[in-house]
Image (cartoon, rainbow, N blue to C red; front, side):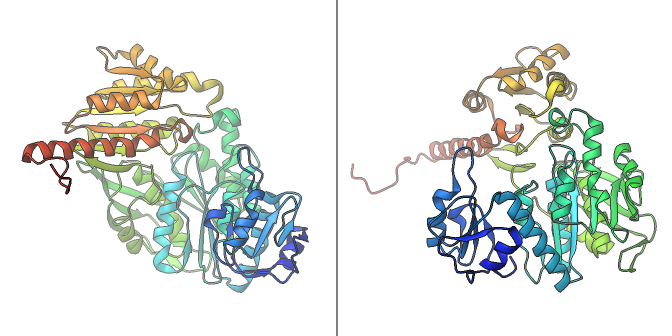
Length: 497
């Protein structure tokens, strides 16, 4: 966070100094909402949440070194009191970013949205831009009205690139985020069915996602998916130049695509025409080879999108291809792999929607050539009235992809099991269980050497927690087997006989 004293923060946010604050208290660190993470010089923002009221921890944050608290009720430590802490953080972030741009005109804001793939693509853009200068692109998905301001407030005077993921639960949400952080480059990945229950229609989702290109200045750059009709149509919603990408259409394409035995894609990155950046420099047309370390054919689309955005921010084609060939997943539980006892576990359960679920199952099918495949699937949340139909379709797809074993977890996901049965699953290939513990019991009983296991659900369905549990179990089984094979006692300590 850029340096600011309490009096200035109060002025920006329309707040009042309380708790003995003199106005000279100077924030030199980051904005934090967790008192346990506070470091010297930080700003502690207290929220009255559903389960925990942050105001109770203002004193602990102060003791840990927080220079100031931002609160909506009285606390006994130096603080700025405001009516709405979230709105105050947003305004503080907006002002701080505007000042940072005045001090460093070369600072570029790259904004990413889409129904699927936002976080992975944001991570890739961060990796692509890091060689060019200090880059802020935090792991995870801080993409809402709280997470995005906190990310903006983490930049400092050296930051050259700020890469922001922008999510939405309704029309107007992305417009709000772009007022906090107006983008120089706006990237739209796709328009799918994520959060369909909240938006009401795919058309409403498209309207919301397009707000990110409407926020561009004329000298900005819109980076759009050429093969998604709803995304391509967003070109009409901006006066900024448009750059497109796709497998077979667009300015930046992938050709000669192939997957290895671990479903890691390789391809030729091909720029069809010279592209002009906002600063007038040119990215010349050309090709460069890419061999990715990430799993899944869908990673090609993420790579193309990330590369197109990075090219507009200053990267070159050869450098982008080299980084894409070395990049590893940054944010956990997104096609995250682990292995033990000859079993490959793919934990992709940070989030799920019908589009990402289909892609994950196709990756599982590729990984499972010559191996038994097990898909452990949970509920896809926020699908509204279409939830049953969309879950049913996933179950049918699992059967068509010849997944060896399907374990469906939780009442919300039950239509996946029903769809699998109606599609022709028989002989216990598909099984419904009510809880995570029941799913774990099935895995402990059935998983064997050579299996490939996929875990996929929305975050709140909880399947992401099964990954570490399953790997711990497999490691223990392997350890026990090694002990029996060598004849060693499990206890090799000094306990007397």
